[in-house]
Length: 386
View 1: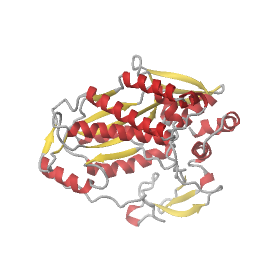
View 2: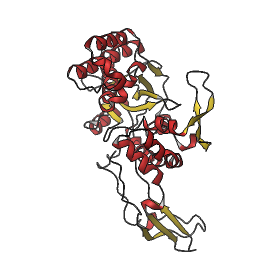
View 3: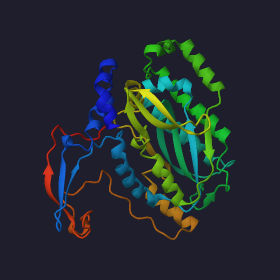
View 4: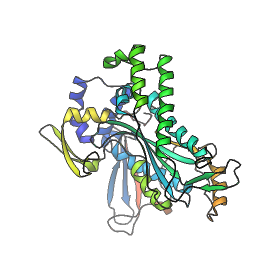
């Protein structure tokens, strides 16, 4: 991805305007793991083998950086897993709202996450269905396999919940979680109600081709059309136990619009990449896009500064997770105790590793790699505040 942006970023800026967040992506990703950001030199204390490692850009849209972030996040989330079946629920925004969502990312994406979470929690709490407080994780994705705009939320939900009095664990049916049509219609109602409120208070940016929607009559027609359509919500079969869930989360949580592994090359000004035709026969295919069009599609998925795309709800919500998870484990009879939660805030790498944690030399496999030099960056430092 760094090579693609390094080649096409300048031409892209000449043709298109960019937001501050998109500009950061264009600037930072090509510098990731290069001498421009500085680094450090390690030397084996036995054979003298040397290695130079350059710093990462730490941008959350960078395919290189997200692998490390994912590993750290998964290690922390492992403590939250329960020994029960897990379900995967997906809520998708209709394509008729795609342009509005692109122009109002913070508001529309936040509303998508909240409406999906409220629909799940409300239907699960209904005594006619599960009658329990559930806990779940929700992850926002905004792309399809061919990088087009396709906002949807993946929810990973333990198969059961706490009774209203908190004294019982209520399991769901073995292969049935909640009724999809009921979820879909409540999700639709909640989302459209929130969108209507934003429109009524003048909080939606309707520019360019969307200007016609400023007319209340035209807006009302769109809302009526969306109320009459069925919205896509589906529940996948249960995963099984915690290990399967952890592997699944590794694929979904810190994913960016396209990974480096899917990129095949740049030829004649076009970018080749693999994609899976989910609307067709599910076969893997190769797509070629003009370089500027590829960059345009990639930048569609840059999130607003500070937007949280991974959220926890119910008994997994941050404010109550420790206490409620301990209660759930007691009720379902788990023997293992949850480890204490990690301290808030990002982990900081120490100035030098402790002797017992020094990495082994990859050449002689006997000595240890020791820090001998810090390499100063050649450009102003970047940090991931996007």
